[in-house]
Length: 231
Image (cartoon, rainbow, N blue to C red; front, side, top):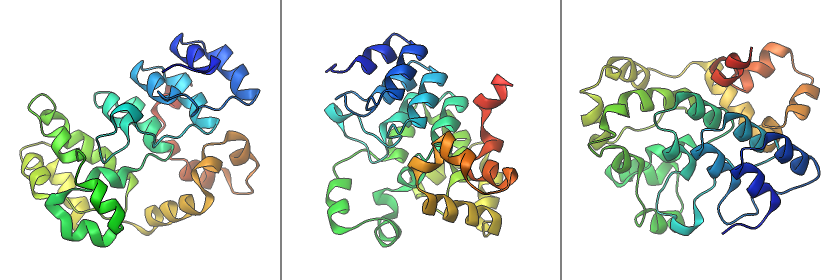
């Protein structure tokens, strides 16, 4: 399952070598086991940021066992908000975490085609994944974080039942019951227009003729916990 020099550089935690290979044109998504997943699982923040900056697919799946509705990387950092924010800031498909059969009527209208629906029923949804006894205590914090990256999403009955027992529920409930602010909606709309590859490319973003404050807002700078650590 290992094919490229980049894979070995990532496995060894060698940031310098990985950067040289990426700069020379290495494809971060070529290996059967994606380099990004290796870096996320190893909690190597700098390698994750480097791979994403060079176009690694933040929404990749573990191809050998692709059994979840939501992209694989998130399940490797449920206890690590710093890593979660790094993935979410760089375009992780958050909406997929709120797609399930418990809200099927809403889900099909908003997110899927007929082909998506067929494959969706054969996979594990986020609410089922996170509701196991050893992860249930994380649900409130996780959902609250995820809500920073979406418009309005339906909370399924199964997920809501767990949320109602957690400290974050009043704040989550307030967010869900009120319209999202126009500033937040505009950010999501602009990010979609610019595309992830450009948003995650520091060179492109630095050359973009937007005011610095706007550029920082578009890349979720206020949630860049790893960036703050470096400072």
